[in-house]
Length: 373
Ligand SMILES: *Cc1c(COP(=O)(O)O)cnc(C)c1O
Image (cartoon, rainbow, N blue to C red; front, side, top):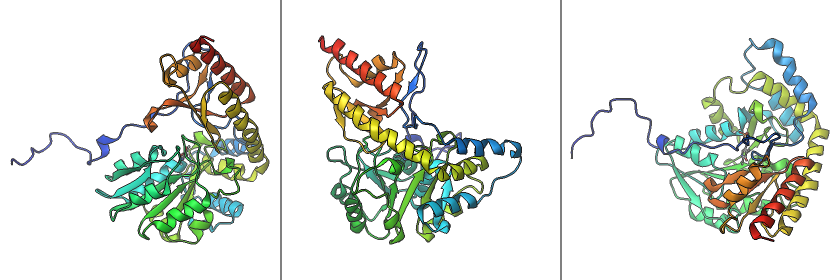
């Protein structure tokens, strides 16, 4: 065997070039006057006006470095949820937090487990850290605790669970999450990604605060991108055991959260009426869309988030791709989820009343046209 030749240019670590770049939801539709972006689970109500004002107030101070410890924001989060601020870490979106956690605990050859249709960022983060992504099959498009536990090995360092999950909209009751935790060896970090927690209206759901508080190996991540409507600013956080918060703080950038994002986040947390309005909007339109779309003969996965998964028959003229083209031509931009192993589904974000009604009308026209009815 010959020794491999010295590379003639820099070569990334193993795993890096195996990453398929994340493709965000489309935001345009060619030749259409008005575009309804229903592809990224953004809130149709926008952020709190108080958050916008707090953001704008920072315009005169752009030369200043932000508080690298995000103190005011951690204090506000702590007060809002009854958490110890020293165990909160803030980041540039929860994506950054997920990436930091992965890099802190997964190295070359280590395994990270996530479920079949789980949020794609986990796989990207694991590969980026040189780790091995391990996929656990789901049951009825829902994470399966036994399947996840069956894939845990001595090399497993992190288990990721989006609860509720994106793009399926399904969730695990807290009892199931506790059973998952109870079955994990103590060296495995359980990451509970609760990006949509505020939307969930189920008595048997919990984002995971209790589990973080009572164990040494559970982290809950949250975001300001979804119900708070601050996706553009990139703001997220985690609540972690003290030793995990310490590890993440050591590897994060010293100024990883921008000042305007921090200020907007503090103001957004204080505007509870705005959040309540967003929950109310979702409670009205999520069931309405589910019912109307099912009435067209399409299958919809029951969702507890601010989005739902529509399944198309996949037959000639009735594929998810066909539907996507039909809807996009009408300015209705949904999200293809083939990268999630769901080639015949589209994910629809709950939009404004106008957008929601247009989607149902367009889907009805699509089904009529294609079924020749
Ligand atoms: C949208 C989303 C996030 C949030 O990402 P940010 O980086 O905070 O914008 C995290 N997890 C899941 C499952 C999501 O769908």
